[in-house]
Length: 323
Image: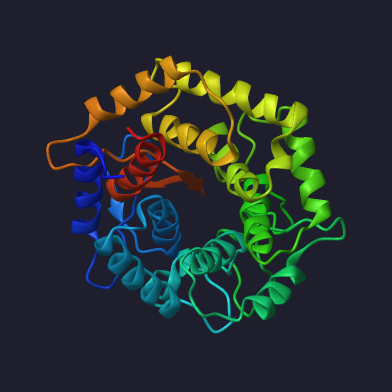
């Protein structure tokens, strides 16, 4: 099916903005508006964008962009065998930015390799990643003991034992791609949903939309995860997100992710509010085809996002919804 005009313009904007290296840009700011923002190289943004581009994977230019992005991600792997948020750019960053690898980035990158059918030793990697689960079988976010550690100024603020539901959902997606179900994580995520822990469920992701988006990747291959109370709880929160008219409370990026999550997880949403959100997204599209940046995740009092990241996730929503 050919893409509609707005979706196609957004896609062309995104492909134009890919850097020669294959990376997609990111900015960070201590303000959610990104009025004063700094360009920051990292592996996470490119991995998220490449996953979103699966929604338009038949496009030859998208396939070429994915190959470039994957080559760049492969080159960012560090000596531990995993991925640090900053990638290889950490070698030239100030000491205060020194951090160890984390499960979220490492799982995201390799799940994108699987998304795009890259030749990679997935089984061995999954076994190595599984070592970073705690005694309850849940992933700790930070991968201690890899030879890298926090800068002393930051270390007191970090709980290296922290267990994050979005991080665990993203990691579980990689294992599910391998045909490996992690029952402790599945039970943990189900409890988070049934107990309706959607309001800021994560240390690093501020939105319920992002939590359900992470769950939807799992549910796309395993529909039973959204059966009964779990599906109803997710449906309720998605409906509340797309119905919110105050952009200060729910951003267009969150609404786009909510639409994508519902499509991936086969969660029914009424046509009228879905059409209203799609019209809103089309109205907010800039002349050059892109959308403005909104924060996707936060760490150490800083927000991260980019026009490219927003655009990729809006394009995914519009492609999945035929908008």
